[in-house]
Image 1 (cartoon, rainbow, N blue to C red):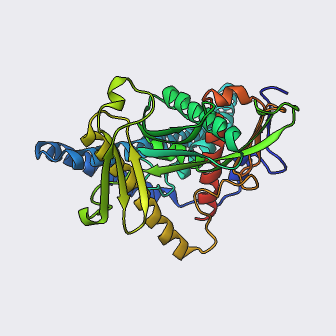
Image 2 (cartoon, rainbow, N blue to C red):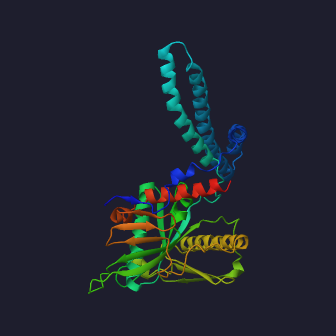
Image 3 (cartoon, rainbow, N blue to C red):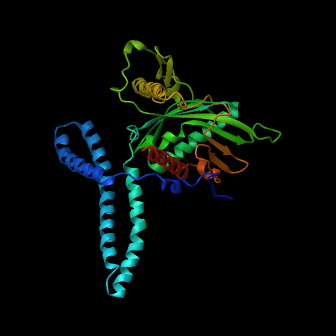
Length: 377
């Protein structure tokens, strides 16, 4: 049915969350409240000292701790009201005891919900969650049909970014002969971009009848998506002698100046062989800066993957080869269905999702990750 949701044989993630063991909240929360109060006092000194970067980091941390303290205050208030209501359960006045009974029945599920919220807020955070990202989409197996679907996915993420109030900027784009996209690289900037989009990394598979198919047969194609957190210069030290930078005339749409200005920048990182091209700006210097930003993000991801591989040899790479058999998600046009294979979630509203309505899918993936972390405590 259109708009329906399936979750396979697994229990809904919210139900499974109830079985995860409790934490000793109070001691930890008292320490967090002290940190929040102390950080609030130092923020004024930090901004007056002129260190804008440190101030932004501390302000972000203060706001994060503030959300925890606010939730804890609500939990403490509810517990206090519950204790008072439980005393009144034994009042000699029947009306008062009846009101107390209603209060208790109302407060217990509220406290359970607040406690669960607290546990989620206290989960360890990925330090990269607050970062902007470099989004890379590449056509895999499937030829022109894969390129057309890569264009569809890029539009999907563009529309989703608009819904979230994020800014998306194309850094490089390689079109296909039929109006598809062989490869597109874009920066996405906004609030907690990586925390949301990191679940999109992997192989996306499409099943539909291509426009080039005269016999009406359904074809399967694949597109790879990589979501790379932007790296600071201090995190990735790129030596000038490790770079080979060439400048050439830009190609493709963009007006008269695109064919008359030597603005397209191609950067080769000699030690790794990584190549980044940026031609979005008319300014050679801006294109060079953007190309280096992409290179830093790729090098940081490479280093993080190397470290994670040392800790767990079984860890999957962020994206696959683009083969049809590999996939994190399938977009089935004949069935109007999008299935995320990692959590067994199917949504029967494919047009809306391709128009950028990704919230339900991403919320389910986020909740599943929270449950995994809670279970590992």
